[in-house]
Structures are given as structure tokens and as C-alpha cells.
Image 1: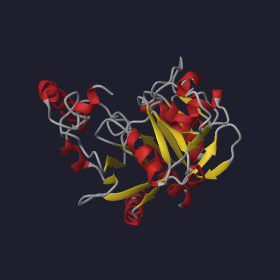
Image 2 (image 1 turned 135 degrees about the horizontal axis):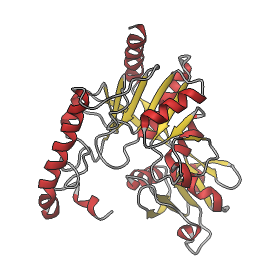
Image 3 (image 1 turned 90 degrees about the vertical axis):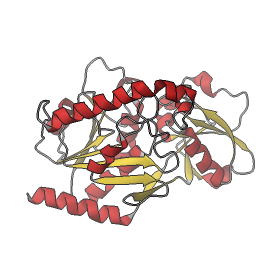
Length: 325
């Protein structure tokens, strides 16, 4: 987490890195322009493609939004499939079809979590076009949702949703490595919908993450979070913004012992050996990596997205317009 702490203020380190940030910003802008002008090729699929992503590094709540979107599409009669990067997956060949019981060390933790919570076909691979094409070939999908695919311009898209963190917003407003931005803020002017995980600003749709129960990794038992109040619990989060998870537990009345880890951290049993028998509560993304050595102390706390109802109607209207063309 060393460099990240400089991204949310303008201090000596971030100022020192700012010239590199300007170059990074310029390169990303030129790259996108090349795709828009046809100098680099974007591949169009035979089905609609919806991209969910962000312009900043770190957790913003993309995965719960993807789950909400898949549920919405399924309710409208679509057969959605998901493509994921498979970040930090160590598969020898790509793309990989992902099942709920796939090894996250092979295909990536987020891909496995999506397969578990979305209950739809999922494929992972660094080449989004190849991955989406394989998904269409081996499943009955008629619409593709690309998770964290905003900057993967080789895959043409029909709808773009950008998620932002309502608390951290855009940090110091600078591009990597001086700040947290993958692209300049002006990129948001071209997306179809901006979703704010928190209190929205003008032109943004509100999203709230809700988690009120815990699931035992070993037994599968489900208990309300309030059952864990009254004594300390260990809170484990290897996500982009661990404090959001910790705050959610505290708002539920829990007394927590914080254990932040790096995003996508590869957990081993010793990482959760805290020398006591207190419950260990973790995010759903962390849980997929801990199932193989789980014990009775370990609980997953899944979250779901509550979305501004106006986004649902606007998104469906846009999708209807696309399919009518």
C-alpha cells in the first residue's frame, strides 16, 4: 500500500511523479484515439456488449454492480455471460471457462467469485475479444458483460458503465503513478452511465452496498451479522479499499480487529492464524481463496448492490434502442 497513500493528497512524492503521470495520461488518450480513428482495430461481436469498469485504481464496487446487472438482464429474458481479465490467474493457456469451484489461483479470484454469485457462464482471459468469442461458442449467451473492461478497447462495446468511489472520488486527480487515475477524468464524459458507490454528484446514479449476513466457509451456515456483536472479531480484507469493508462491519455494531491486505492477496493458512479462536470475517473475494484451508472460525460476508431505480429504466431503454437498430 506504499505508493497508494500518496494518491489521495498532493505531497512531495506525488508532485515528483507528476511528469510521469502527464506522460501516462497522454499515452492513454492517444491509445483511445487510435481506436476511435480506426488506426487500431476494435472487434464487434454478434451480441450486445456491456462494459463495467472505472477510471481509477482500487476497489470501487464493480463486482456487485456486475452481479446486479446480470440479475436485471436475466429478469428481462436475456442469457448473459461474463468475461473477466482473470487477474493474477496462473493458467498456462487462456481463455479459461470458469466454474464456481474453479481454482482462483488458476483463473483469478474475481472470476471465481463472479461465477459463484452470478450463476451464469463466465470466461477469463487477458484477451477480451478471444475470451468473449470463446464464451459465445461454448455457451448459449446472447449478451456479454465485460467486468473491469473500460480500458480494453479491442472489444467494441454498446454500453459503458463507469463506477466511482463516493468517498475517495478521484484522489488528487492525477494519473498513475502520481495519482490513482488510469485515464483522465474527461473520459467520464463519453461513458453512458456513471454509478457512484456512495453519495452521487450531479449526473451520477447512486449505488449502495449492503451486507447483513455471514456465511461459514466450512459448514455453509448463514448467520445475521448482528450475531457477531458483543465480542471482538477479526476483519480481513484483501481488496482495493479495505476500509469500506471495515466500516460496514462497524456500522453493523461489530467490534473489529482490522487486518488489511493487498488487493488480490494470495492467502495462506498462516495469514489467518491470529493465536485465538475469535471469528474471522472476510470479503467474498477473499473467501474464494481461503476455502481450501478453511476452519470453523472463518466467515464470508457477501454484499449486494442497491441501485438507483432510474438507472435500471435508463439502461433498459438504451439496450432496447440498441437491439432495435
